Length: 199
Image (cartoon, rainbow, N blue to C red; front, side, top):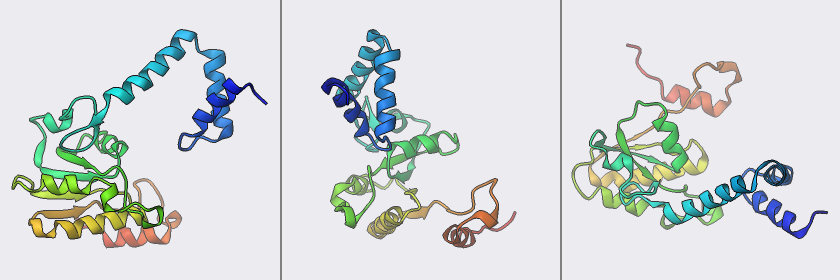
């Protein structure tokens, strides 16, 4: 239907997560019709530079252009508390609250036996190395409340038991501003399990 060059461009966008054929076509045609040659070149260069310049932080495994990353190297962060998350986007979400003052550990995935993802495929060993010194007092497991995220949290919790650190799991339940009647059964169960004393 399109020339080979346009088809190749569409297919490259279609390969991205959450982008279907129609969205890939819209992006491709926006670049071809609305962006100047300089803008398109700048965008392409930013992708190439990011791929070349971004690496894993030597401590937390988050994506960074300087290692250690800004969070790990900040003297204002509490190095005794590590929040374990599945991906860099989770770090961003927690940082946007401006409440958490500890450091992070990014797994880059979750255990998923069906997909062939085992402990050696995510960055669990790097977490264990970080616990070899006695500065860490608490590990917060902030993996997603999915089957894979929960299985990952349980697995890590068992691995950490010999280290003598406090292991906690973020609470899950009814979102603020929503009605209980619209919550699913599992969400209500979790909300009841994670209830707190009123102060």
